Length: 60
Image (cartoon, rainbow, N blue to C red):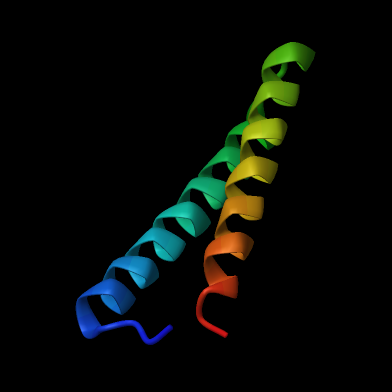
């Protein structure tokens, strides 16, 4: 299926947003001192990374 320019632009925006979320959550996890909070940030970061990778699969 062919994407139009608006769909492609929206997809790129979503990918960028998930990458930003991943980077921020990783940073928060590194700074966290409470093990439960650290684990929560790490899990959320991994989910953001996984979603980014799924979104990127639409580009190929």
